[in-house]
Length: 292
Image 1 (cartoon, one colour):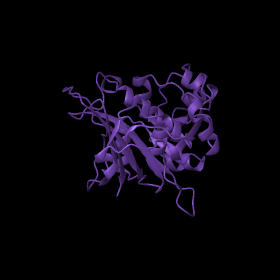
Image 2: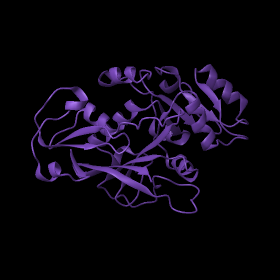
Image 3: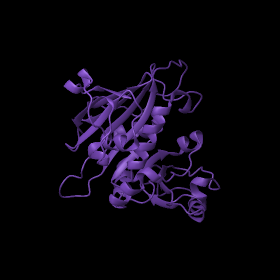
Image 4: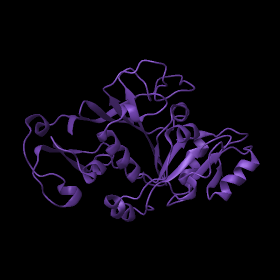
C-alpha cells in the first residue's frame, strides 16, 4: 500500500526510515517511509510504501478524533465502496467490487468503532454476521474502554429479520435494533426473545436518523460507523449527520442499474467534504474525507 495524498518530501523521495514507531514503539525498515499528522487529532502516524500495512498502522491512520471538550459528542463515519461508474454493489452485494486491501480497511474500521449502524436490507442482502473479536485489536479496545467488539445496530421499520441467525443468537455483545414507536409489536417481542435490544428512535414506523444517532451516543457509542446501505446513508447525509466518509474506489465497471453509495432524499445544497488522505493498492483508491 502507498499513500498518494497528502504529498510530503518523504513521500515523493521515498526516503527510508522507521515505521510504526509511534504505534508499536518498535522500529522497522521499509521502502518509502514517512510521517504525517492525522487530520482529526494532530497525532503523527507512519506509513510504508511497497508492502501490506499492519493493523496498527491502519488503525493509527484511521483513528477517530478525540472528543470535543464539554460533551460526549459522537463521530459518525461511513465506509462504502464504489465502482468507477458509480455502482455501490454488483448483483446486490458489494463483495464483487471489493479487494483484499478493502477488506483489511473494512476490518480495521470495525475494530475502531463502538457501534456499526446498518440498514435492514443490507443485513439481508449481505448476510450480516456478528462482529468478530480480533486479537490484534483487543488491547487497544480495552485501553479505550470499549467492549470486545462493536455492537451491530440495525435500522428497521418492520423488523423483517431472521432472528435465528448468528447475528442474534451468538453475538459477543447484544445486537441493537432501532425502530419506530409503531413497529409491529409481535416482531418487537420476537426480537427481544432472540436477545436483541430494541430502541425506539422515531414516531410512527419510521426511524428518525438524528434520534437514532443520539440514542446510540446516549448508550456510550460515540465512535460510530455506518456501512450503509445506500438508503440509510442517504438519509444520514440528508439529515446532516455524517462527519466522515471512507470511500473505496474500485477500478471496475459494472454498468447496469445498481444503486450509488447514497440514495433517497437530496440535500438543498451539496455538502462539501475535504480529502484527508488518499491511499492506493492494486489500483484501488482509499480516500478519507471529512466534513468542512
